[in-house]
Length: 149
Image (cartoon, rainbow, N blue to C red; front, side, top):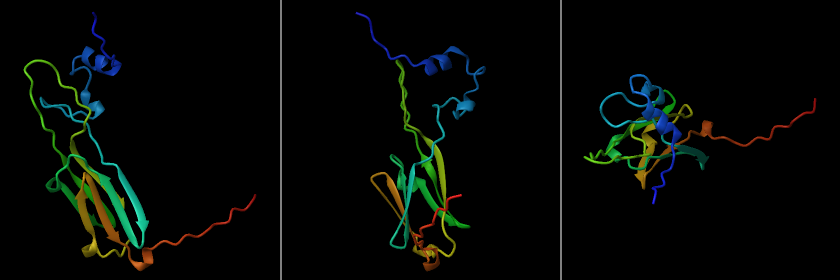
């Protein structure tokens, strides 16, 4: 009985040419003898409620000590590294769809934020950063009338 294998044309194309001909850096892969790593950036949700800006960043598999949160010049920056746990096999191949490497996300915050009151916590792979907004930065909804031309 024949084995059924899912065809992946991109993988076949990459394996068909030598790496020196097909510069893998074009795809964000790191040069070197180590595992291929793709650049990635965590997905973030930013919401404002009750005078607080809430930033939630998905960081599954990232340890707390590998994350930095900084505020400077009106920008909140979340950066760090998701480490790759490599395992070597003598026979066979390993296929992985998970992303590893350094990351950074920057989000603009209003001027006048008291930086000493910013709080961050990591729970179940989600980093929550709470930024208390100054009274002048709290937004109020205003309906804008649309005029016919």
